[in-house]
Image (tube, rainbow, N blue to C red; front, top):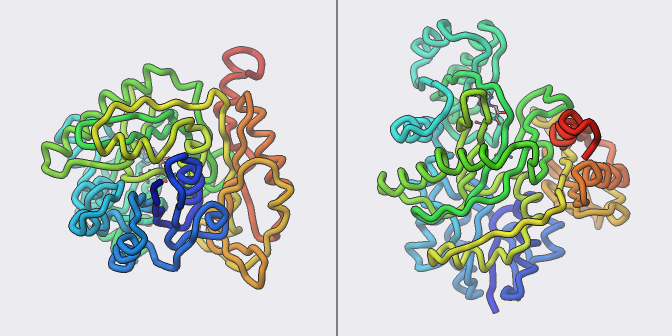
Length: 427
Ligand code: AMP
Ligand code: GLY
């Protein structure tokens, strides 16, 4: 029997630990540092996600067979390299390969050299040059901080004045700290967005079912960009040919390009894609599971995640199986997110909520479950139709009580509304 360590403390890691715990080959899952939800399926250990020496010591002591990293920060800092040097198996990319997420400039450069479709762009580390270039761009325009900014480092400006203001805040006023010292200025793409995640090991690419995230904070895609306010899978209104195009023109070429670049990618490669009138284009790459995409994908995945990791690492052939029933999840976030967040508000009603509730940001205080950050819970449900999954998820959301939470009320609506349009009736 095998032991698995999941690194991280959010909803994505809760879903991963939950899934690993179901493997008939795994008898113990550990989570570092984990969260109260993960404690139901794993043993939480008090080690931070960036305490690489401590984690390596723990993995050696406990004879852990596989370590799976949830968040991008330790991957970009080189945790895989440290584990590899210690002779330990960690499913995730090296520091060099993680630059696909850690530096938007690196990702854009790799895409343009490889001919991978993406928005036209220019990158700058000089404010005056950036400002002059920006003045010549049509609106809307997209500004991206070069470095990591927890999914919030993107600003879509509607007017030249807004764009110049945002550029100044990023490059001169430290809006995203060092991450914004360099920026990418990008053409605004219009179309339907989707998340295509794949297990990748060198040239081996095993695409998953696609999912759709909801990045903006409020209903009807209003408000600021967030880490994601809800997700669902599959996305049936996008055709298989669109997905195939994304696999063949975006994911496979990037996996090959990384091999040629001397930094082969191992792990989960996340392609944020936009189906535009001019074909599928890349919005971004991430070097790990998306959060909240991971939660819905893990509920839908019918196969043993531990076996998948072993097979991918051994370059064995893998066929993934997904549930026919859609899965939809609603994020409950602290009021004020993504700009600010509160902690310590008591949450009740979880036991009455039907469905699977993944913990994104919770802790326990005086024996009570309390909020502990921006995104707090991901309430996930599965049903024979997307509409039913949506109704079930919101029924569960309404059972959960906490004064300081808000959520979007339209998760999955694009998938449902589209069905109404095309067929004249709902699913
Ligand atoms: P990113 O962190 O690069 O995924 O950007 C966050 C979100 O901003 C994306 O999920 C899109 O919704 C939006 N976005 C980013 N780049 C573009 C673009 N070039 N055109 C339109 N929307 C974009
Ligand atoms: N849900 C988007 C991300 O994880 O980056």
